[in-house]
Length: 124
Picture 1 (cartoon, one colour):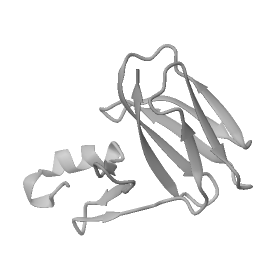
Picture 2 (cartoon, helix red, strand yellow; picture 1 turned 120 degrees about the horizontal axis):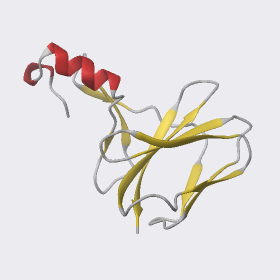
Picture 3 (cartoon, one colour; picture 1 turned 90 degrees about the vertical axis):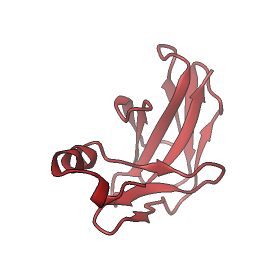
Picture 4 (tube, one colour; picture 1 turned 180 degrees about the vertical axis):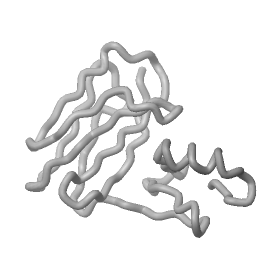
């Protein structure tokens, strides 16, 4: 968790720009830190989203059964967006054959209302 007392103003701006998120080890809890109150806000989607396989190799599949259009952003461990796509259909495939082995994060957001959730993924 980021504490306001431990960072200076320039770093604080940088963290806001990077759109921080957290993943609590051993749980499905995730969200973004609220840097003004030092608490955690969880912007989870209201409808279930399935991401598989975990761990992944050359492809990631995203399935959702809502009428909403979802946006998926695959990020590396530094928070840089590697690829992004829109998921208007029930099933969407993301090709990942150009990625190296490691830990990645998938941010899935609802385009209409801004709700989002994160998934921690491992590339074999």
